[in-house]
Length: 221
Ligand code: CA
Image (cartoon, rainbow, N blue to C red; front, side):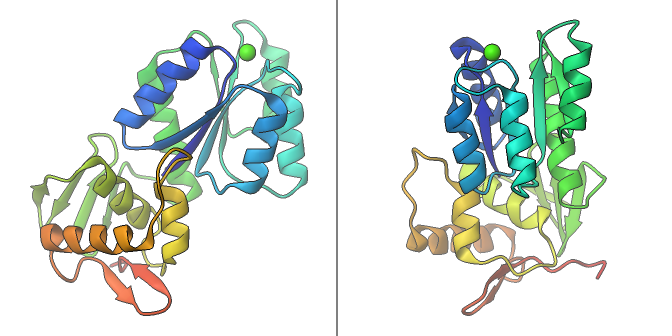
């Protein structure tokens, strides 16, 4: 899962990035409204954390332009304390949720998890498919009831596929959602990562559809 953090206070931006990285998300950040608008319009983020007070273009304007352009990623806005008209305007402009500064990082993480789940059509913090259970709160994966140790990158991959269970996900899409701006992107590395996960989770856990992509079958469908 890949998240864009838009925040011009470097300390807050840094704290959010550290927390989201530790929670298994790949993060890009920017501190400027124009830059944020461009990135959100051109990159496939799974969620955007958007501060409203920004240089060059304010956050509300950025959000309105994304929604006007048909961009539907979940957006969590950060607002100043007591600024309720700003929150109302933000929600009306297409924000999915908000947090008032200062906030607890645990609350931000819980809201991020919930928004990403909902945008995948899932309600529960536990996602089950193909004999696997993903616990999005504990960041753990279970195969046939047994916890399986995975690296942060392996977790990101399995988490993305579990959130999109029942759908064949193209390799290019996985790569876009797995890596941030600073990471190198490589299809061979993805293939190797899938092989490692199959060894850990069982050979049948992730199916390859040659020429189309990868799939974790949804038991329910
Ligand atoms: Ca600000």
